[in-house]
Length: 334
Image (cartoon, rainbow, N blue to C red; front, side, top):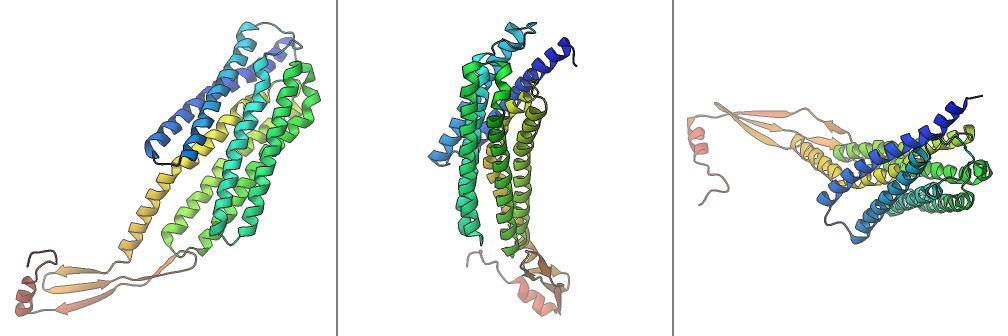
């Protein structure tokens, strides 16, 4: 049985850590937002509205989180009566997180819907995009219901009564993240197999890694939040990951949007390298002209089966050399 001091630390410590890291992630979001504004001024109005709306929601969520931390850690410092009424801002956590998660998850479901036309898994992409959007709505509805229900009582003792709704909320978020990552990876792997070019296959492999990384961050956080809530209902330990979940969703979206230019640059670089490796060059040497031909045949997996260079040596005499010296460049005036 933990002492009263230990119970107080378990009650207030996660709130402090969650609030601090929430502010850190807000700074990361501002950095991502600055990059987006500078790099993509010509994005569609709908996409700009999405980014702006999420940014406003995140600032509001941070303000509410700070109010909750102030009431619990400053105004209520030293109050060890854990059955006291919690501040009204505590009820906004699931509502704000569920809303932000809904927006981001529906956005990725829409991206899967758009990608269906470029994959052989058209029917699968349709079904998965609709399924993801449906689960996203369910988890958001559960989060709203849980937030409103908790706001009506605002007592720590009544948290256990909302276990089932919290389970639906966090399980829905976890399922959405896994389905989004799995569907994107399936589509990208299929596209990589059909690509005959090195630069395309390499870029798709990077996209697969990116999908795994972004999906894993939010999925693991939701899973940790759910585990803490199930195992440590007598503490506020689950609030630490819960306060980070919304920021992680928005940052994952911004990383995906800001990575477009980097991916385009990588494709262009790889394309130029591929062109240079297949170019036919003529190099001049003293006394001879060396003709070098390089060729490559793309395979289905995107690997270039390069052949050995064919080198043709053509000895020339003085008369040929004098004739060659009279050849003008193509861009010289006649």
